[in-house]
Image (cartoon, rainbow, N blue to C red; front, side, top):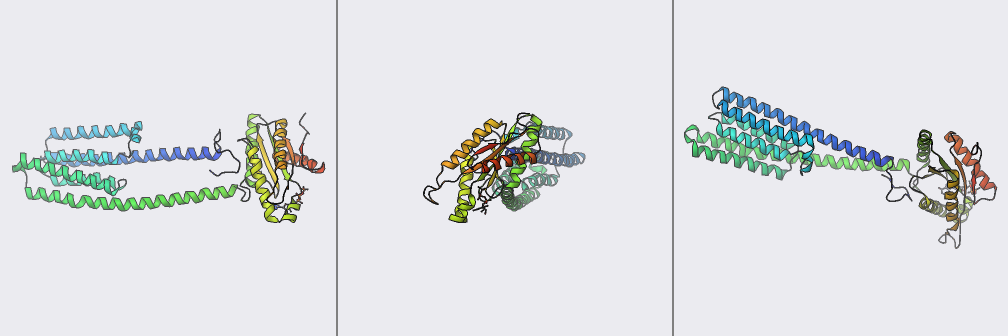
Length: 387
Ligand SMILES: Nc1nc2c(ncn2[C@@H]2O[C@H](COP(=O)(O)OP(=O)(O)OP(=O)(O)O)[C@@H](O)[C@H]2O)c(=O)[nH]1
């Protein structure tokens, strides 16, 4: 959001940019949640592959059907739990809403149990540890990864200890230690890969933030008058079109005012261009302070400004612009010259179903009248008003 001079800091309504920004945020949040759910579905797929592999062990006679059903039951339970967490949005209450660590812990516990229950073919189950840890590569920090690795290695170690204690005759101890050593070696390498991907992701995020900032700045520059900080001509004309469309739909009223600094050329000629610029900036600031939040003001030309007053009848517009005129006239630019005052001539017109061009022309005619009648005054364009 860019900041126009004189716009109140806290607005009682959301403007167009704020609405867009909020919509974007909501869209990003929805997209992130969809992405998490897609990753969860990937995890479900890897569970199914796991179920198939364990099924092969059953077929080979290394695991009883009873234990296999226990494995399938637990697998369904775990996945149903995560499904509910993602679908109800409860996952958003966790510090990591992707629940990556939790999912890896759950699948590790399941795999360790099956590793304990099989009578042979334990080596194939090592692949399940690796696939579950693969998911962490996308998400976890190096530290989180190491913690998970430590957990998995310790769980496997504990399982091994129980095997040695309870069924030493069914295992080849050297081979089992070799499996464990493989885990100890391979899992930390995943952590390194994860850390590398994390760094890449961070760099990408930084670059994105940078680009977003640059884009905002460009958008800001595209609509802002550099000198005064008000809307530039293109932007205020676009505001006028929007107000015209809004009012046409709602059947409400709005007014515009063209404001032109009086004898401004003399300021430039007498005090220099820099002093002229200072006066323009000050004028912008003075006027902005007098406006209500729905009003918009922009620099229409060199020392000419266009004010749009939504939901306003001509009598109210007259009151507002008279107040502006008085404020401007009452300000002394002592830093330029002791007691120096600048005046503004104003022409106002009310929307009466005419086109924006016609409306501008009417305000301009009224402004011309103010100039002709001695300047420092507000004139109303009255044609059509009482039709
Ligand atoms: N300092 C400065 N002067 C500007 C800028 N844009 C326009 N001007 C000057 O504004 C002056 C406008 O002069 P005129 O159009 O003759 O109008 P005026 O002197 O205000 O006389 P009236 O409008 O009849 O009261 C010109 O001298 C322009 O050079 C600007 O950005 N900075």
